[in-house]
Image (cartoon, rainbow over all chains, first blue to last red; front, top):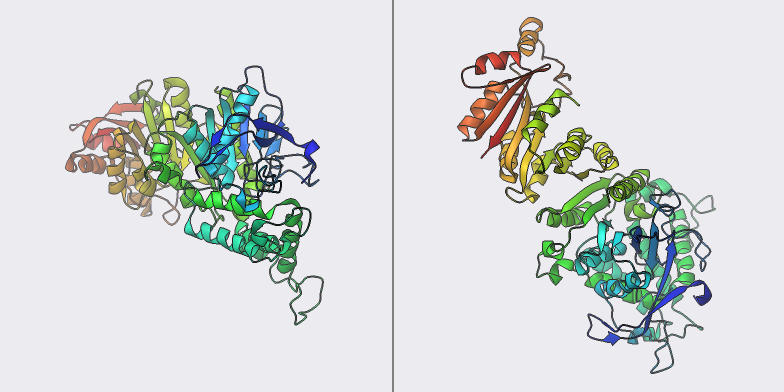
Length: 372
Length: 198
């Protein structure tokens, strides 16, 4: 996480008042861009990442050396075609890939903020990222897009800045975090807190970190990103490099081994405190509540064209929650399209090679762009 | 584009806001958008048809007319179009009410079960009629509430639905239906087109 030289950073000079009441000054927003901003500056797409994503959308992530999290969707000739569009993505506030977060040094103590970092919200995240428009001199984005927590940021962004995007693509998300999703996030946070290395968030970033707790949090969350059918087809009851059950608690089943692996690689790239802060921001997200219970009011001021996408096997952010966004938009006569993509890959579908999804995304963007 | 869509588009003035219910692959929507500068939306139940519409750059919502029309406010469209789908709903009366609530006007087309070829098929062969507009067998047809032009005419009258215009299509011929020629049109037309308001 210290390969700072690979990370582009904007230091935001303008003070930002957070929802918790605190004001922050001179804070860093780490970002990455792909493609070229055209002369009219009308081809920019701001992509928002999900809980464990970062600004490295596509190509090789310089820190993890793995493919960017949205490599299937973003790149030359892909759905979000970087030959055509200028793609910007920022690490969310609270994150651990260079943006202002709990692993940053607290100038008043000289050590990492830890849990002294202010509790941030989706609203704070998008307000911070809005500074990138000024930085690039972009008056209006061609599009904003994101899945899961990225989709929540999309909704919050257009409600905060109604005339700053022409098209709006919330994917596999919700306008209000459900009790079930808060419950899963709480499970992850408690797993971290139960790790004795967490030390109330005051662990030394060089020394012992709450790896075990964070790995369990990731394992539990990972299950929610998949579907029962997908898991059954991929793993079933297949055994892990053994002929028969061993009558012990090693990973007998492939699914166990897979989850353990997912947990172990996650701790190498993610900070436990960031996990606490970002899941909290998701839990606090309730866009309708910000508008006295009327979700439509969040979108009343915008003329943007919306395209809402959900997936059949996504039980974390099910179709109905995505449709609620569509209903709120239709009730005010907004320009909104909606499609539910058939896929058995669960919530993760938006990150994977799902041809119907990718072609719908591409067609929507390219057709909307030529109508400009 | 088929004659039916030509006739429908002639009923819609320029620059209107229109909802095409059961818009299929979006042929009519595209025509209205390009030729009438229509602010057009579609509602379609088939995922693959929705994809075709998106590929045409059309704004479509995947959904079911029987459940999903209720999200649109009263009179939020100047026209709501329903082409040859009324007979496929479980509850056509409910859908009719919704169309007339959401649209200031509704344009509804129905395959005419009173068409002479349909009558002849049943009379001579004694089996369920199969024609150009009704190509399916009884066991796989989506059409569960067939009606004739006359049935629809009477239905509209009994519900106090205003019929502004009713047209009969027989191949390329389009003619006006009125009270005095209803019986004849009901015999010779294979499709009825109605411009309605409630």
